[in-house]
Length: 187
Image (tube, rainbow, N blue to C red):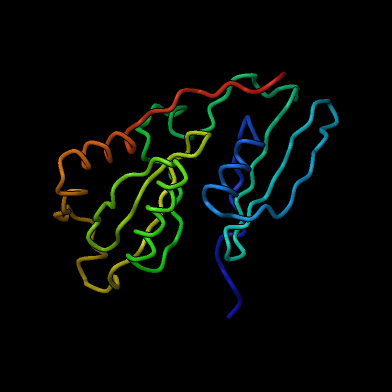
């Protein structure tokens, strides 16, 4: 069977160097491709693709002095919609709980604030923010989704994200945070 799925996600940043540094040194992705797009009406767009390790890419574009693109823009996807910070997010696959815990420890060692492990019943996750305010998730599936109830849109009792009150507060703080619009760099 041919591979199916996402080739890349295209996102915006106002500080491409900081974004590349975060995704390569903090998350361990490889920088795969960079170029500069020069629109006919002026300005330029720095463009970088980061390999997530499985052939899927995150692509970031950073506009500079491009007519028609505002000098101030939100890069987090949620704040322009006036939504809590957890609606739009991206989840990266991890194979198991041991890998999830190791990723959490690795992020902490690199100075990246992440939530405690959140229990969603069928999967476990940690959440963090990138320099653009995007909510990122690392997620490990812990059981097969085969029960008839799994596919029924009903209120399902979910465990609290964590039983530790301080850890639960921290998790909700990161998940609910609303980012403010990011100002573009030198214009």
